[in-house]
Image 1 (cartoon, one colour):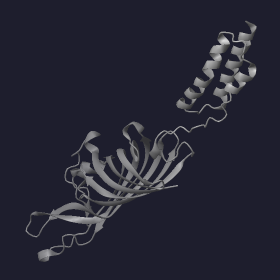
Image 2: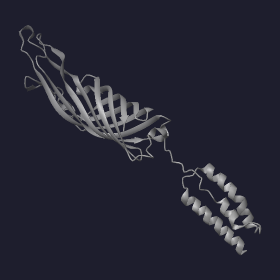
Image 3: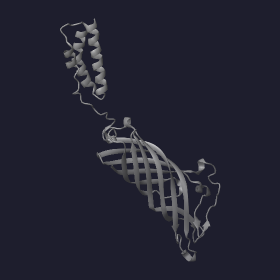
Length: 286
């Protein structure tokens, strides 16, 4: 009986050593090794006198097990081996402005700096620019009616967002991201002789400048061409606190504000405006 207890104790000690020394072994390898040990354990349980201690020691030599590294997902770019990655992205896309902003839909150029940390989190700093933007303005024409023109200017935005990688909605080489953030929008428009001195009229110069706070939500799909080169498609909805739209015509002509209906958008909800963004992204990772 004491021989059986000593044998079982040695078996348990050997198995504990196995778990401590090779925690990352695969389930298939462990199953095979335990299959080799099990007959010896059975012989100890029945008290086989022909079985010596050396036989058990030989069965418990498992040092050739190869530790494996847990792979969360292929397109996470070796996050299990790195503490973080930096992603630099250039993107081109479209900004679609809601009607109350009176800004023409346009092509936008942008850049992004990402810091991607373990846990599938990405901190994103984005900037987008439309240096050829146009804003609709209305003024009196030579016949006494009202005409619409486009005033040239620049609109740009700068946002800070938190992205979360979703492995459940991703496949090999294709990563799905989603997140939210906040930012600032800047509007600067100025043009001389918008309507011109037509039929003896006066030349009209227009101007508008303002800033708006915003929040955004986004989704993005990234495809890995190389470990350091990714391409992707993104969609984002910006919601702006655009209080200036409360005035209807919020621009100036020759230094005079053209507002005709202050109180047009009274209330928090009425002051909100949206910009829908679609982008094509090219990223380099470090």
